[in-house]
Length: 282
Image 1 (tube, rainbow, N blue to C red):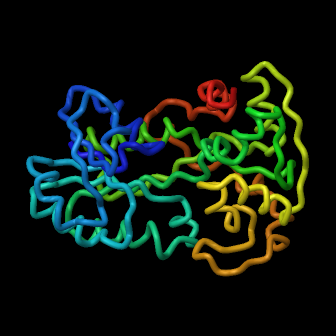
Image 2: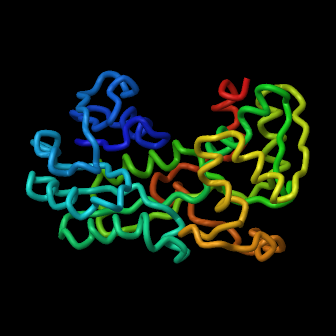
């Protein structure tokens, strides 16, 4: 079993959950790799170097790298891989993503191998990048539209579905959308984190422009995703107007698909996620 992206939010949990099978992980930085597994240094952007990594592998968890997806999948097939589970995105289902995750899905489908696509929606873990610094330093959240919200998904739910698709039959040719079990506003997300910490957290409402400045100042994921998350750009980076989505009410979508349809276990709530990650906000 090969896990790519094994140091990431989902890949690390997939690696940990693959019990009673031999696991090999591919990472650019072995120092950050999980313990107790075979670790190989490598990069999906260099598919010509993947021969030794893929040797003896029959199943593969594929982190999305669209620039070399076709070459990576071709190398996997030549090495004898028969099943690939793709970490994709719910944006593919919505038709918003045509240039990043979709090409990876297409490359795997065209290979003729068994495939399953895992399409998470918004990750609850995004809040660690967006809110973590201000909560840790000041017990405050600064963001726009506190009464707006979505269906944030616990990363363990995403990993559990991937593990099921890797280990068990019956998932070939399926794409699973994985979301949180209920819509929750940003204000209530902040409250859930406060409850998990046992301390008050203030919510300071910002305009979209102010929030963009705040995200950019954080660096990393927050800065990179600021324009998209706040509506200044579409999924492909084209300019957009934040006001166009300001009045959209996600509750009209009803209940979205969750991990329960695959695992048979109730999807984890945002409150559960906040309790699980409380230490990261202290």
